[in-house]
Image 1 (cartoon, rainbow, N blue to C red):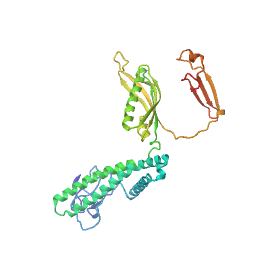
Image 2 (cartoon, rainbow, N blue to C red):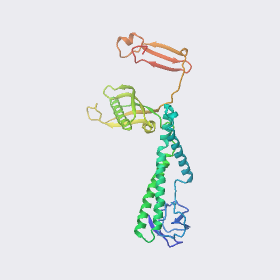
Image 3 (cartoon, rainbow, N blue to C red):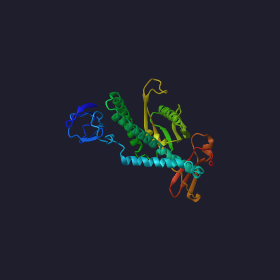
Image 4 (tube, one colour):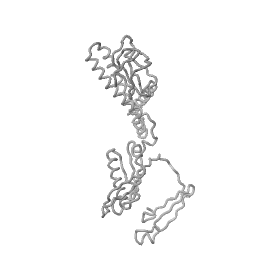
Length: 335
C-alpha cells in the first residue's frame, strides 16, 4: 500500500494494484475519474482510494471491486428465502406428524444454513461500511475523526474480503454423496503382524475422531490379528456429513517404525488399506425362492470334528443375476 500522485490530478491517494490490471477505473470519494496513467505498480489488488478528493458529487463511494455482484446477491437472497420458508415448515403440524418429511426438511434447511449466516453477516458489514464512509466525508478538517473512519473502513474491508471467499467456497457444487453415512473398512496390507497392529492403530485414531464428531459407530465385522490389531475390520458410521469428511481417507496408508514384534531394533515398513463406501439408498427387492439354488458342504478348518463331519457351510446362487453367497463361519446351516 503506497501513497502516489496521479498525473491527471495532483491528488495524493492510497491504492493497491496488480501487475495484471490492464484497465483501471478509480472512484475518488464520490467523483468518478478514469486515470489513463499512473506512476506506481504494486503486486497486490486494487481496492479503493481513501484520501483527499473533491466531494461535490453525491455519488456513493462504494467499493471498487465487489466479488458479490447483483446477480450473486439475487442468488443468495433466493437461498435465504428458501431457508426462511423451510424454517416456517418446521412448525407445520403436517410436517411434525411425518417423521420422514421432518427429517428431510431439517436436512434441506441445514444445507443452506451456513450460507445464509455468512450472507447475513456480509450484509451487516456492508451497512457498517456505508456508515464509516459517511463519517469520513462528514469529518471535514477533523484529522482525528478522519483517521478513525479510515481505520474502521480498512478493518471492515478485510472482513468483507474474508466473507466473500467463504461464501464462494460454500456455493461450490457439492458431491451428492457428502451427506450420506458410510461404511469404513480397514484391511492390513504388507508387513505381517506389524501391518495388523498398524491397522488396529488406524482404527483407534478413526474411532477417537468419530467420537469427537458425535457420530454413531457400529462394528460390522472384524478379524483380529495373532499379535494384536486387526487383519480386517468394517465399521458402519452414521452422523452429519460423514462421507464428506472421511472420503479423503480412502487409499493405502504406510508406516515406518520399529514394531513391537521386532527384537533387533530394525525399522519395518507396513501398510494398511482404507476403503470408504457411501451408504446406498434403501430399496425393496422381491426375491422368488424358486430363483435361489442352495447347496451345502463341509466348512473345514478350525472347529474340530464338527466342521469335518457336518455340512455346515451354505452356498446360495441367485439364478437370474448369477450372484453367489457362501457362508462358512457358523456351525449350523440354519444360522
